[in-house]
Image 1 (spheres, rainbow, N blue to C red):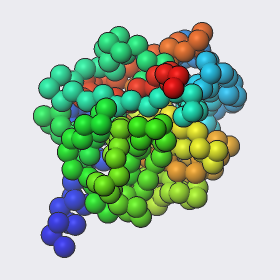
Image 2 (cartoon, rainbow, N blue to C red; image 1 turned 180 degrees about the vertical axis):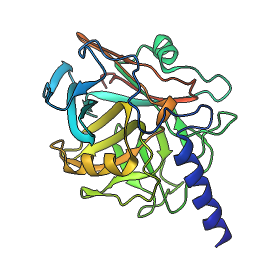
Image 3 (cartoon, one colour; image 1 turned 45 degrees about the horizontal axis):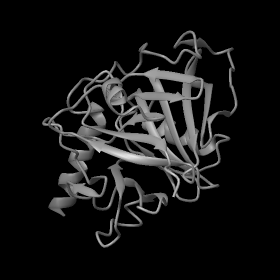
Length: 282
């Protein structure tokens, strides 16, 4: 019982701060950031309904920008989404707790097709849960809450809700990031999240009903966790399950694929990232 209470307190503290190293933007104000060149302004009026639909950047990578009305009164909230075919691209986790860097620096070093921030971390830049980078595991699994995106060495990718499917150390993992909370549970049901309604920059990773991986970033302080969960489950992206990654100052997304150049940098230095690379032919 004491252990469960401890982890509940930890969860509340992390959700309240976004990430441990930097304060998140004020909860009720849209915060401008480095935006993709496809969108001229981070703030749109509620009458705007821009939606590019899915655009093929390169084989295995599609991108989409859209605005969502009703999240913040009288303002349409920008959302950036990437859809990935695991058969054509590789997910790779990088973790460097002794050398955290802004997302742009990670991108400059590794030059992936897509890069997004990872999960939560402590004041000394250690992941708060299990993380696996190129087969090497760090940290300990969450128990009874949160979720995990993982990839095996044969290229299989999945997201599991740890409440219903606990981490099994006997299952070999090539790459993995654990985070919390689950936003959409397997089958497409929006999670019921008890939080304070704080709005912040948000990053989520999801899988659709066709088995494709989606990365979704809202780079303005618009969504609460519950609002994001509800919107994802009701969107037309056919999401089967979704997991929240670190938000606030950690949120970021880079896409350098084909003619697409998106650059949404993190405000903070981050110790872990999820990179998307071309899959090497077998």
